[in-house]
Each structure stands twice: as C-alpha cells, then as structure tokens.
Image (cartoon, rainbow, N blue to C red):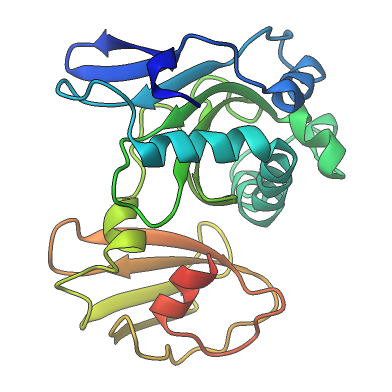
Length: 250
C-alpha cells in the first residue's frame, strides 16, 4: 500500500486515524460476511490508528495491513481455532447457547462472527505485526467482540469498550525491567480456580506439566501495568515451559 493513498481524520477528539482512499482487496472477508448471521455488509471499515503529529501511516502499519490483505483465509482459520479453544468454552460455561449457534466446522465460523472493522494500532519499531478485527458477535450482540492478532494468530479478545492487554510490554518488551519475580497462574477451564500458581522469572521453567489442551495464563507483577493474560494451546507441546517460551509459541 502506498502512503499517499490515505486521508487523515479525527474519529473523535484526540483519536487520529488514517483511512485508505482506494478500495482494498478483502473479497474473502466480504464473502464471509455475506453468508453470516447479520445482514450482508458491502464494505468493511479500515482504521489505521495514528496521532496528531503523523502525516502518514508507519511502514510497520502498512506491512501489518498488507499481511491482513494477503492472508484472509488463514485469519479466518485462526478465528475458528481460537473460538473452539477459548471463546466457546468460556461462553458455554456462562450462558445458554442455542444449538444453531454452535460451530461444527470452520465453514460455520460466520454463524457467530461478522466482521465490522479492521484496526491497525500505532506501530513503529515492533518486531511482529499486530492488528484488531472487530465483530458483531452472536453470543452477545449488545457488547460485540474484538480479537487482537499477532501476525496470523489471535492472542487476546475483549468486549466492546474494553481494552486489550499491553501487548507491546508483554510481546515486544518481554516485561522489561521487572521479569524476575512474576506470579504465574494457569487455568485449564473458564471461570475456575487455577490449576497452578507460583513465582518464576520469565526465563525459568514453570513447575507445571502442560497437557494436550488449551490454557489461559495470568501473569502478575508489582510494576504497572501489573497484570497480563495469555492464551496457550499446548496441543503437541506437552512439556514444562518457561513464560518466554510460551510467549514465543503464541
């Protein structure tokens, strides 16, 4: 994408963004939406987040959007896998899900999700590509849902109006400056007590044998921001791991 094909605007006070002036090639996402549970959408909102001083998107932002544009099939596959491993178990334990809302295979992912917008956070020196997909969400259409991606993998999800983890501090900085005395809690079921809790450095092997299933991992420290969460599918990775190894596998 060329940097002269964008217009800068203020979405609301202090929230600056760029939008492309030319139509992006998002046919796979549009087909996904046309078959979804929501009324068909003819376009997707693209938001490249910025600041008041910038006069064009950063190179990393342009690269991140190019990755989205070129990998729509893989992104939908990641949405399906994350739903099966984490979102469905969490909501199934919390609400009554109708049988026709249960996804049986990847082709049915749009029974639950319909893409509203693609957001690229402000990125400059990051090693990985990060972006956000916002959805109409059939399990909670009042609050909707957003997925945060690192490259082609979903790494976090939140409801409408909630903030994501500080992904730069966790994935880019490695909890720099305060990673020697972390409290790590491991959960193998939603809304349950932890199956493990202990203190470790980011490099130290956690005294827990991961099995062939999905886990949520909470990380706590004294320095602000104090808490982080990771979603880790240990399928094919049964072993003891350090936190930095889990981060790199995510």
